[in-house]
Length: 372
Image (tube, rainbow, N blue to C red):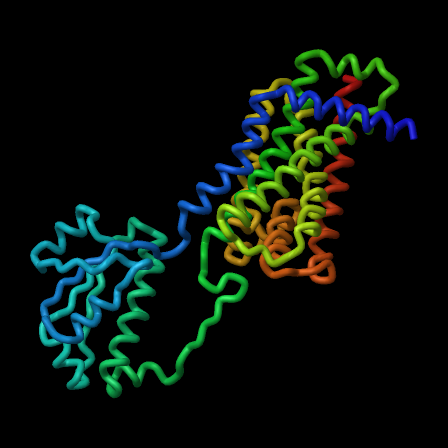
């Protein structure tokens, strides 16, 4: 009971210290509002408003139909372009796509001679170029199938493909990006808040004051983890309700209560990692240098930016030891697929095991640092 009371009082001390730290409070406000809204609302994963021009050398009904088929929001309206300006337009970057309809295209199509249609792509616009070329290919195929019912166009399409996007029917990239931004900010804040809190006490001498009190390293560490986790969980809940669901209009299908519980478990692991890094550093700048090579792989290789399936097998196994990998998987499953405890318990168990391992290592290192 005494240990619980000590931990509670130390946690209140941590919250009081945070309340008077205006810089950290402003950073928390920014991380769970502007830093989530702006990337999710302004960044589009996919083809959106892509510039396109068409060189119509055929001047036929088919070429006009192809130009009219490219419509917003995926593409801007096709701009007519003379053939002799093709190289200049591509070199200057005016258009991402330039479609060249050759002479006698409609005549050759009706005669079954399989005419060629050239699509020039500015591949420096990576996401637009890769996905937009596929979009244009499907649009052209659809228009040609409507116009020519027989011939090579239909011979190459023996079956119709019906694609259905589950959990995100309109393929809105901002939906997933908003949640990933929250996950990334939680990771950064969990490590930075606990690490800097410990180093601030060491630099100001307050940690030495704690050591003369009847307190243990476990109580000090639990107080720091619990207080910072409480703050981040509350910020996460407010951000989901106000920014993600309110401002961005993302329909979260799953249980917020389960997600916040999983967030608290993830914070148990990541804050312990922050304390471990703080015990290795002797100053706040040194802690920042140590945190960078830890945080960046956790953000980039956890499955949020790049799917784990596309990574080398050995790297997939390595990242299974990172708590962020399981947290990203849990976030998508709970918030978008409405997965319950019966579905996500393996990731929760893995996250709990990693958290306990990190906590034990950090506690041992913290005890050693107090006596050294």
